Image 1 (cartoon, one colour):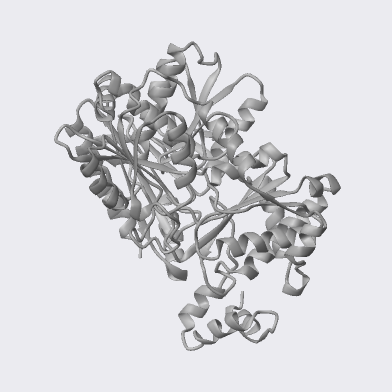
Image 2: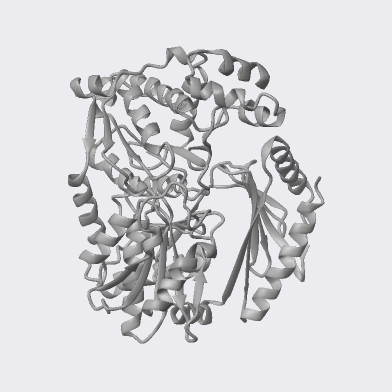
Length: 574
């Protein structure tokens, strides 16, 4: 791609408005910025389209949104009139230009004769997944950049099953997008015309009410302490209304919301990086928690599909749980409660990502619940669940990944911060009646199943050179990985790019059941393991490390050795 040529085209083409061309004029003396904005087209990754908001082909702007939507529209039109009439549901979050991008999407679809169902205001991502299934639309779109910094936005595409698109749908859509070489070919009509033709329908309270009732139907116990003190922060995102509503309607009496982070704020003024995985996002929640005596702090990310928690310990301080630990609590609570209430399906199963820890799997196995693995991302987790349920001999009850995403039930096919908030608060309230905090419960699990420890390292390498270095790191590690870490030998490794598993104890090779992806996973003889993969949506290479031993100290020591060996190898790659 000749990025200077494309830059000049954008700069001089009057199709682009004056504001866009003025912005591009302002970077004419910055060749690196021009290159980064135009060296490629923004591509679908783990969670769809995502990038910085600015003018350019490698940025999020109304022109790229229109082009991508035209490609999607071309694919839907190719699927026939029934698909066009079923239409597309569209939701958006609190970020800069989210409402503009959502409306642009709706009007491009309408101009192509495809019915667009657009929410009248901010809605959580999981409600969109529910809406696709509820209205039987052919597709769904959420305009969101989830937990990314304020200068990002994104565009997630869903298909008729309510899950994010897999490559079988994504690849032909990408082909259609790539075939659009002239922005003038993109169709667009006015909002008035779209409404007059019955091609733009606004959604609101009716869908909200149905969704909340569905969430409440997943409740598992009434014998809980509803007076438990809980602090909630929506981090200025879409969770404020639905999470507070569902907790109130479940009868929780002491839910305190962080006032500075209660209402939508696209600049995330009080938090900067609105990712609840980062304990710094809990600064205001911790202060309020100490003021009101909260036993639990919960936070959802801006599009409310992910949940993080902190729990008060015996000294009055708050301890952060990582995604694996929160997943373990939810699995234990859900499976044990279903068992107690005689609601556990005979062929129940859970799905986790290939880089998520194995402790949840051990708990599930205790109750005869099988665990399946999928590639990273809920499109793969829910895709695997859909595939297994279609076989007719399995019943999905829970899906999760270490990056604080969870879902229960079968009416949302994506991670759901509303569902997981309700179930997590319910779990804390139930265990409180037994005289236990969630820390106590987690420690009991460790004592029974072993001390599982984990660490995620994300190396951020931005720009063109960063992408090239990430590629070199993966290439070198694929060929020169360590055979021993500490005292533990490597017994198996999986190269998902090749779709192969290699057993070093028997020298046998076999095909992996997990679809191909640029992921390397290494299993040691003591059950510890680690994985290396580039992020699909951010300029990062990620290293997931897991250790297990009989004591906490031994397990943590193993983790330190693992980190040193792996990082020395990766950092040696220039």
